[in-house]
Image (cartoon, rainbow, N blue to C red; front, side):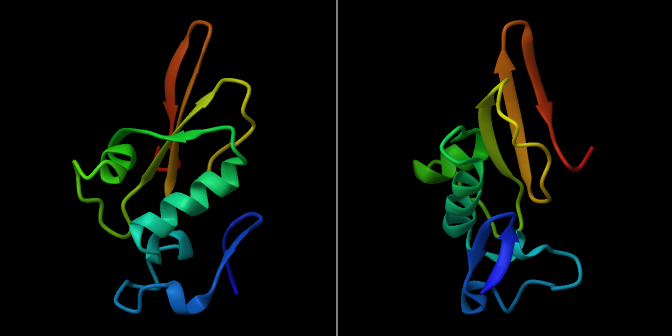
Length: 102
């Protein structure tokens, strides 16, 4: 078992062998569908996939392994920043996006 996010683990055999281990975190080496499940589990039911991640689920966009996974969450979510995931927070008077890449 390998930790892909805090409190979220995956079997090592599920990580892509083709991905560069030196530049991508474990989350980025998962198939996009598994990565999306991982970030939803990490958010604990307090967020939903958004942007390109949601389009991938609906078959309207093909997300590649290692791409940033997008979540939308209410302002009260204490999800914070994680490598490989971006969170859009919304609430009264807010519409900002926090990303670990910034």
